[in-house]
View (cartoon, rainbow, N blue to C red):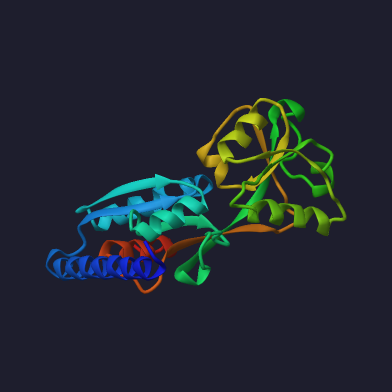
Length: 244
């Protein structure tokens, strides 16, 4: 197609999507909070989902869920295609498109923790660690072609302590990092909530009390596009732990 043809097609698709959303909005006026709510999440945020879903279901049993996992690139694509309505993700949201296209609702931040092979440390030692001690271990870091913010945030913290360690391995997924730590390959720094998704007797978890650095988390959705009543209600419940 020519450039003009591509523009017309994009406008037609947007118009059709808008008509579909208008029809859905009218239907929901009669049905209330019901139907299927499609949510995306990065792996490191999966452990944050059970509690708000449980609280949501207590109030709205007529809603079922469809949950998909992916990195920022995939989640932004699914949001644009309306495959999902909401994404639970680490911030900043590293979408390949204009970030101004997305609405972001910040959630309570998540402290970082050090993860080490349990065989490297005596079971009796305190579960706190300084960055200087952590820097002496071979380090694994989460870094992909599309998502670099967490890697940069962790290494910024090392630099604030006058340290500049070289990572042993850059990994494209949280699951790979956790598996390598459990196998005794290296240590890493990840949001502490991640541990709940990957429990392992082979991993020792250490707080980093002298840093105070945390991972920001948020709910993300498309700006200026219709959100179902169930999605709006889920945002309210997720953002307020006291909301029931």
